[in-house]
Structure formats: C-alpha cells, structure tokens
Length: 84
Image 1 (cartoon, rainbow, N blue to C red):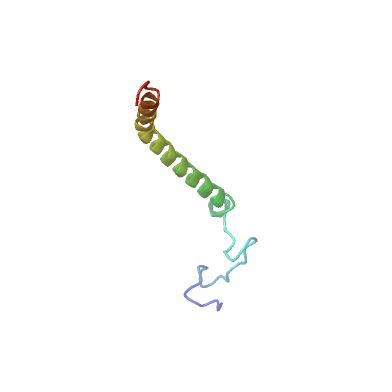
Image 2: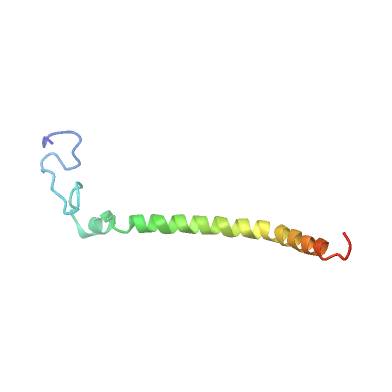
C-alpha cells in the first residue's frame, strides 16, 4: 500500500506498522492493546450461543411440560380403566 493512500489508518506522516498476529496495525498504547485482542471472541460467541439455546430449550420445556404431563397422566388413566 502506498504511504499516502487515503485508505491507510496510520497518519499521513507515519508509515503503517506490521502487527504480530495478523494484518492489523500494532496498537500504540497499552490501553488500546488491551482492547484490540481477539483471542477469546470465538469462545465468548460459543458461550452466548449455548446460553441462547439452553434458555430457549428451558422455556420450551417449561411451557410444554405441564400440558404434556397432564396428557400423559390422562393416557395412563384411560389405559388403566378396567373396561374400554
């Protein structure tokens, strides 16, 4: 990339720096360095997806659980009758 290109994020008087882990520029300060890491992002996304699926499943079970239990008990009652 040409140093005077408008697409560069570095100031015009400073050449872009190479980063250690990829194609992003190296952070200038420790505060920015703490916010620019991306190592745990995928893990956090998996945890969020797992929580969403778990909460949705728990809501479905609690919503359908009581009617299904009542239906099951009714079927047990009907099958246990001495006459059809």
